[in-house]
Image (cartoon, rainbow, N blue to C red):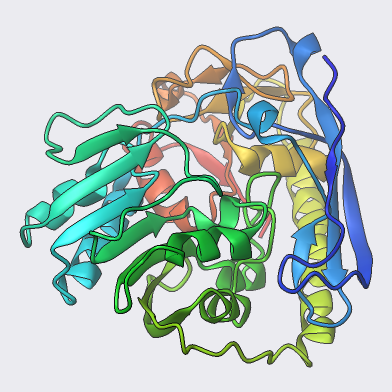
Length: 383
């Protein structure tokens, strides 16, 4: 299967500056970070190019997939304990500001609105491409995408989005459009992955064809202020998971460019990240070579984490398949591979199966769930 022409970024997503430098590239990376039931021959691969701006130090993916092709395979909504805790904590964060009328961009099944309704009353509207509300969700749904043409009515006192900003190809334009019709004083609540901590801890799932820029400070605050929002508060959720923001619509907000020292710092971080990924996979491969031929070997996660392991040349010669808790993924295969996806229940039995695990912030949660199935599982993490 072939791909339409890639979208080449012409400059920094922060300020448009064209002084870009390629840091490295991962050749033939799968364009979809989920599962598929289609034949392997239809999978599409493109080089994932990491580049950095020489003036402001912002890191981004330099060539993008057309969005209608990137998202043609479905994402699934099965969430674990970590995400449930995220929604509960974010609802509490919002409740501290008592919004009465909320517009949520990309609210999925409405789980955040459900958590907020346990704390306070609010009229809640969700804009979602394919509405599929949870039975407990009482929010009003609007079917549609948030684009440059979409107009959010000025009747809401709060606009919400969670783990959405990092997906937009032009985050500054996204934020400007949110504020274009908002009344002065309207608050925006949003959550983003804690990419700064994730890159320092060498998690594999920091950036991808979906998370196309280094969504971290000071760039997030700059984007807010450039769009006419003044950041009032930011709070970490766990040490390595997310950061919650609240910003107030303020047309007098001024954006200060404090990026003069970020080029060298960010370049060092990302090159160290790449080197560490290579070292981790090499260690995993060494551990795999020590195993007897009859050991059952699996990788956990039918997601981008596993695709990154393969991009750094994980040896999958004796790997039987991929494990994932989401029943919607089971019975399919991870896009870009021929590895089938199964339930972790296949680990049941008296032998000593092996699970390769690089789950980042969800590692402990995943381990606990697997050990409840089989206490004899051996984990290989490359640390």
